[in-house]
Length: 226
Ligand SMILES: CC(C)(COP(=O)(O)OP(=O)(O)OC[C@H]1O[C@@H](n2cnc3c(N)ncnc32)[C@H](O)[C@@H]1OP(=O)(O)O)[C@@H](O)C(=O)NCCC(=O)NCCS
Ligand SMILES: [Zn+2]
Image 1 (cartoon, rainbow, N blue to C red):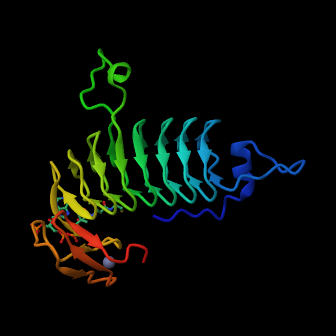
Image 2 (cartoon, rainbow, N blue to C red):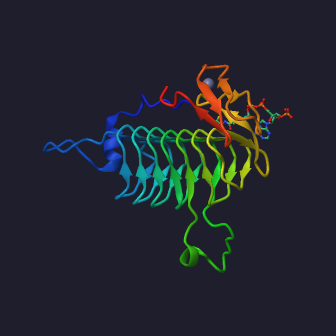
Image 3 (tube, rainbow, N blue to C red):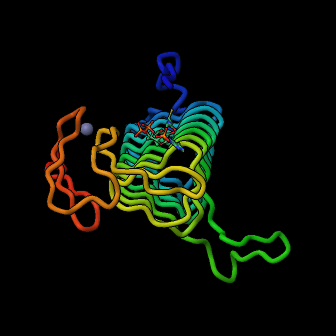
């Protein structure tokens, strides 16, 4: 999903955030499309891109080089990690934490109250539930994350899944409710072992050859920084 930014030069970004190059004032080092709104008090990291009709509230924190697609909403208090990609039509409600390099597929849905009622709002009694998405994790298109769960590092949620429980690191889950199908490589491709495998086996990704080892709890990458 490539959006051509060549048309939008630095002037547009300056207009949106109200910074002008006079008296040595620093220029913003991130891009905001003219139709997007970034409220005063939002923190935006260098190299971030915020596309058409998106809204970032005061108190939100966007990491370096993150990318918010079209019609993305980021509530106050939300953290978006470095290099994260949030595709079109995603709302990051209060309580959502995206660690670095998280991928949120188009139109996926976060929630922040487990048992909402219009007449008896829970915000003031129990607050919003926290949903944490771990480093490098992917959430497929149109998936729904029921609030209060933690998605492990490099976990992979299939398109259309409804996630109701915590997800282990590297796990691939899919379906309604989501079930554990297998394990994903850091590159995104499925690894050979299936859930319930014996511990202590060496595993290599068929695509990128990264090396893993099965453990009693799941799977462990032997070259995490690769
Ligand atoms: C979950 C996913 C990663 C699995 O990919 P994979 O490891 O290559 O798995 P396969 O396609 O071989 O499917 C394995 C089985 O799981 C099922 N399956 C795959 N994806 C599924 C999904 N999202 N929901 C339910 N079942 C799914 C397949 O039908 C297949 O079942 P079968 O063996 O009975 O036919 C992938 O299907 C997916 O959903 N990717 C997300 C795509 C996306 O949303 N991209 C957004 C950016 S454009
Ligand atoms: Zn791989």
